[in-house]
Image (cartoon, rainbow, N blue to C red; front, side, top):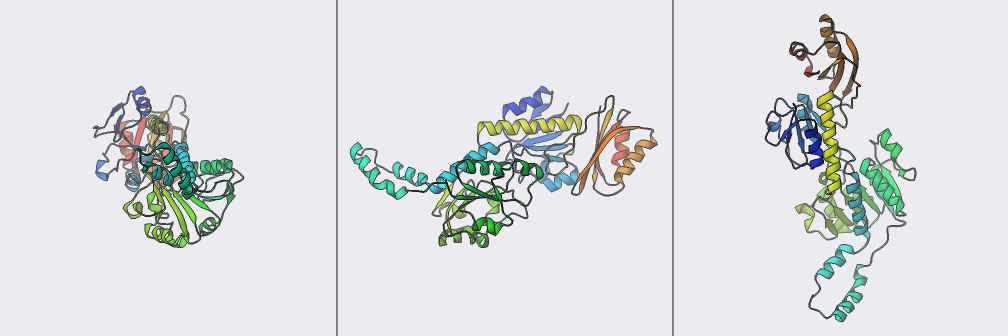
Length: 391
């Protein structure tokens, strides 16, 4: 029986996937085979020796020590696209807030005197609404930085609103490119994206290459009065540069899902309490996806949607026994594994070897039951991180 440790509240539909397979499920299992979490900040000390996988019910993995997991041969899963529609809808709200005086108007109404005469209140409202006049999205240009699952959906929504859409994503995958509307104009660099946009929306992960990338120099490419939306990650916007750009009017409005002390009291800022994926549907989708991925990995060794391991899917050969080997991505290790099998007269029926950066992963179907002795010998091969068998 596999043991799953949950470090956050996970949708019951996802938990049921584990229960249906007879997995042991609790938040106190210290020798777990897998850990499932949402926003919990996972410390290295929480990685027990037995853990094989970590599942993040969401897209970002900033709360997981991925490098340490890779070193230990622990597969880290996420759920790209599961909450994309929820975030897209909130970005749409942000777009509307950016051009209409909605939030300002609501604050004005909330400050009206509830004891005021109805006719007098109507007079005050009619005379004041001009202060909240906005513009329309139709005809404006939206720049989308990051054209993955969320960015492409935002782009499609903007096109349906009559906006012109331009996009920049140097890491755009072939799969994502096929899903992207042909009406989205691809831009070759970030300064040009900002220079050509009335509004820019951010949809990129936080990494060493993107943290602080939206700085004063980049924002200066905006026409005066540009609007910036950040429903991606707090760290990608440099606060000092944003503050200066807001003060000079280069950025007219900043709308973000990440409130921080540095921008909380600035004018022309609308902040939300990280609502992007906070819908019942998104939580269920993420939970179902991560549970399915971890269940498949533990039972078959197949990997889908890992941030540190390659995607691997090998159909089980009839009558076979499966061996999964994680090793450093250097020459001769797989050869040593196969030599060990050959020395024991074990026949390989099928296999798949893939690598990602410094790690390699192998699924090998053999004609002999995987013994503890075989796993021990393979694990002792220099460069092998771990090995496990399936019956």
